[in-house]
Length: 258
Image (cartoon, rainbow, N blue to C red; front, side, top):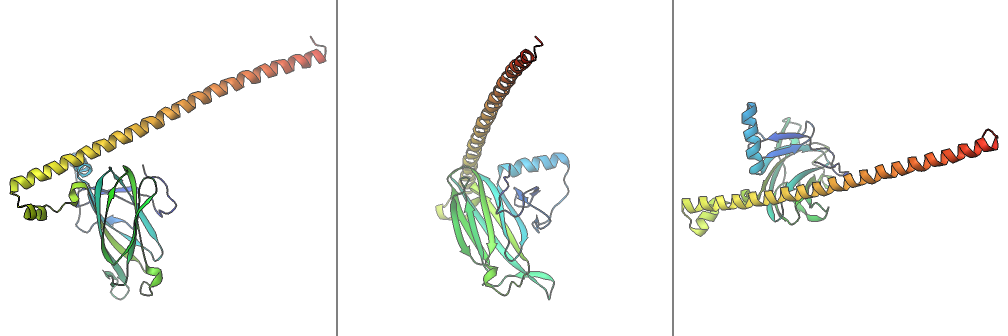
């Protein structure tokens, strides 16, 4: 579940399946599918695609930000998992009425927080950049981006389009490079890929167990609080009833009705 955050100017409410093969979250009409295209799917095919998207994490999307706007995404990541993010920016050109590649002077600031809201990455990049981090705590990680447009006149209050691609787990590995470096055969490379996928699935399972444990603890705590609140209500009603009976008895005795 996405928590409301003050620094997040929008909620991740619309789930999209993009060409990168992963569910991606975004908000409002500013966040759209990647320009790789989409196609209509039947209900069973969509279910299978969503299942594959959950197993194989990685997504691509683009969104628009204003001059002083900051946008954040929440990514659920198991512990000890590498994440690689790549982005490129395009600046709106009024003359051509289209988005053109940004000038080198326009940069993006990337800030990443772990589930404990500790900053694990805060760095200024160029108009095109690549950031990498490894999660040490399972849970929801915040990935926030904003431009350094306040220092530049060329932005001129326009809009900036940011193409963002996030790869998680074994999808961060460059297998052709690994095969060339270790001189692996096609079969050995495929075995290596399967081992990495099994390791990532184990991490996902451990993370789901962790979430289940947290949910069970929350449920038990809530049930215990409800029980004690019910007991407190019962005691209050009993004490109130006894006090009313004594008050009525003293009132009738004072009026000499009994």
